[in-house]
Image (tube, rainbow, N blue to C red):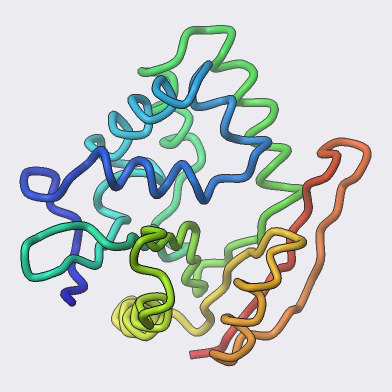
Length: 202
């Protein structure tokens, strides 16, 4: 296995987009497109672009010896994020009504469901392993490399969010040493959605 930065000219962007889509919160998926195909198309546009959370500069892939993408990690240091740059990137791919909906719902998701990312935090936004390759230690391999990335950025804490009810992911992260430090469950706004906020100091 090889862990490396995404190369938009070499790696399968459709596969990368599918893996990102499958790890997004259900409340956010509709904002990316009216149906899955449209959402995947929009994700791929964002991946190709820069200066947004889905941008290729924030993505690493795990590939086999033939270059097939087995898994992805979308992550970033808190010092390198800019919410308005994200919205500018979305404005280019969504119509005006969709964009306004994203502005409102996106800010709400950021405030009510996800961890607050400080300047010295390294946030693991999306971790996904192709279903065909699960159970082979790829998730652990990604986490080991994520800590190296955090150290390289000079971050003091690695954080992530786990959807309530995803016990498999929760156990994996706890086994790796992550601790739950918060829980967000805004039932009135995002029915059926909620997250555990987890942290691990570098």
